[in-house]
Amino acid sequence: MAFSVLIDEFWIIKPNGTTILNEKKDLTIDDRLFGGLLVAINSFLMEIGLDECQSIITDNAKLTILYSVNPPLIFVARSSPNASDKNINEKLKTIRSKFITRFRNWATEKYIIDDKTKKVFISLL
Image (cartoon, rainbow, N blue to C red; front, side, top):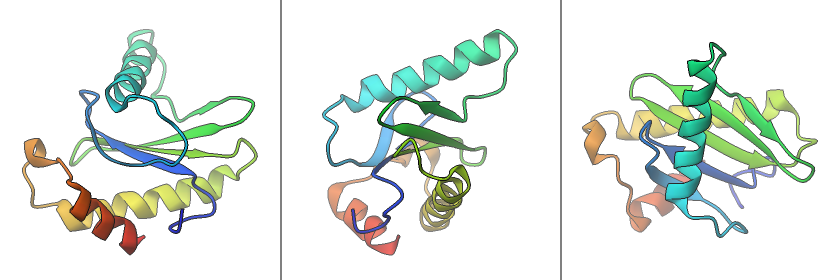
């Protein structure tokens, strides 16, 4: 991906699990399944009194998760499990900031990004 050597793929997800924007190269996972899984994990963690999930690490990948309150969105980056948490979080915060700056005036229910808009947004990163 041109926008980052740190981040292999990323998603922007609504709190209901709907993926509104993603940039993925290798995964063929259904976006609804992926978004629903992340929301379910967070709901479970909060139900048992824990904080929101910040990362999920496997042998070959790390998912770093960043939340936005206004508008309520979930930003997720997939990277190497050895990638620096600090660097990934900084890049994810940049993505969040640019996304919210560009789309702040949209009503929450209109956060649906078409392919043309997606390409323009990716080019800004």
